Image (cartoon, rainbow, N blue to C red):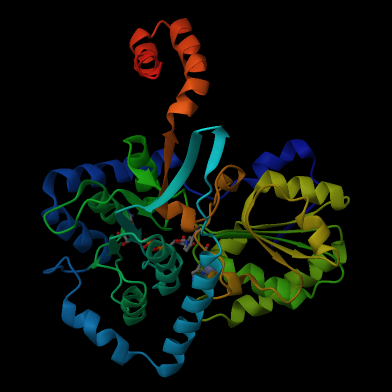
Length: 422
Ligand SMILES: NC(=O)c1ccc[n+]([C@@H]2O[C@H](COP(=O)([O-])OP(=O)(O)OC[C@H]3O[C@@H](n4cnc5c(N)ncnc54)[C@H](O)[C@@H]3O)[C@@H](O)[C@H]2O)c1
Ligand SMILES: N[C@H](CO)Cc1c[nH]c[nH+]1
Ligand SMILES: [Zn+2]
């Protein structure tokens, strides 16, 4: 990994830019795919599956026999791991339920909010470079807890663990389609794929661009969750081999991933680089990780304050704080998707099974977006009830405001009722 010693702050934006292809180029490739699916429906899905995934789709829906056979083809060890992850993710997301809080803003005027699960949701499960069955749990558990009635899942993979996890979380329909075309199918609907009200899930740049383009058309999406990334801030108390392993864990997601190492300790950066090369060579799928590491940087900073500023500017999807005062630094981080504290909290645990959600904003979007949570799957409907006494107290305020806005029918809706109470 290239070591950048003490860059000036003016160099940070270029240094911290992600190695993504220009959005304009990706959008140019994705826009015709969206149009084709909207116009030709299932026929487009078949043609695009053949073109991009080399799959000859006779059935767009996953055959029920394939789904039913999934459980039997997995080892007991893997099924137990998936069930443990499911339980932990469920436990963490259950804490996100918010009790209804009724508040009397004035005597006789009561307001509250109801949380209602979004009726029809679409989950995208990546399957290009790896079958991410863990993502089924990350999206399916909060959808299940929210009470979503129709849970549609699209993936280019027919890996049995995806199908097993889908059954655990109560997915209602599974389709063997991937990429931008899967996102378009869930947004517009086709003969086979139902149109949903909100689309969730991570994916490569084509998937993310499709979600972003459709969001401009008014389709609800969770967030831009593109190529994975991790930033590690480490001091002399960190273990170089652990840090190198964490960096490689996100680099192996794809050539367009990026990892970042930040430290005030020059010797530490050099030690990480040595063990990183050895660990990289030992990886079975080293080519993707090697490309990502080529796009990555180890940055030497002056002091802790500069490290914190740089990390906040980068707004990493994942941030590992391998420093002796990790909790103290954590409080100073204002931009990150998910934070991992200390030497024994590998980011992989959050990817799979600790309980937090791994669907997180990438490419700097952590400045404004949160990761997926129970909230992402519910709408909040406000409710109010006003008693006659409440209307007597509140009515004059509303009448005065409506009059000043020249909205006389608004005023009359109050005045008529007030007169009836005299
Ligand atoms: N941010 C997050 O929360 C998060 C979580 C998990 C995974 N990820 C990321 O998800 C991504 C998964 O990517 P993936 O590629 O393995 O799987 P994917 O399922 O996202 O994409 C595969 C699809 O891309 C389409 N495609 C491939 N080449 C294309 C081309 N030239 N033009 C148009 N479409 C094309 C194909 O239809 C294929 O089905 C990785 O980058 C990973 O880092 C992110
Ligand atoms: N690191 C990914 C999120 O960026 C999630 C994942 C799934 N499987 C392994 N990792
Ligand atoms: Zn990962």
